[in-house]
Amino acid sequence: DFHPDLEFSMYENQEIILEGENWIGANVTILGGVVIGRGTVVGAGSVVVNSLPAYSVCVGNPCKVLKKRIPADSVISPFGEYTPNFFK
Image 1: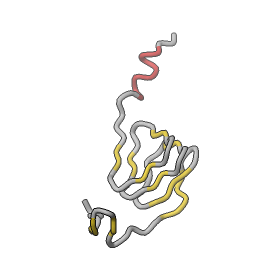
Image 2 (image 1 turned 180 degrees about the vertical axis):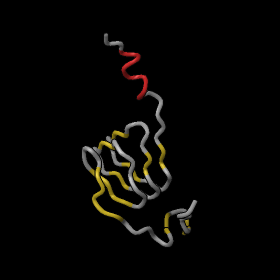
Image 3 (image 1 turned 30 degrees about the vertical axis):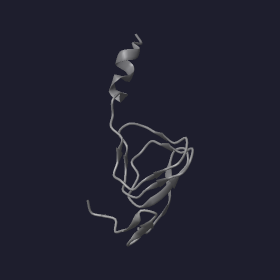
Image 4 (image 1 turned 90 degrees about the vertical axis):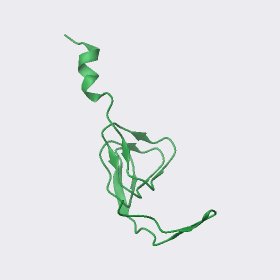
């Protein structure tokens, strides 16, 4: 017997964790239970089904690591210069 409440209950209410300093493109779908590492860039239209490592550029369906990126020592923004805290 198919019962929709029992079939999908194990997939409900899973957390999505963004560790910070992330860039998420437009129309990105992130499934529950995923951790997106600090400083990760996710390309537009991607579907994130697995956790992504820190400081990487990820794209696609399913989302995969395209390349690793090197974090900046300091950031200059319109609000001033600051040093990101990489080891929070």
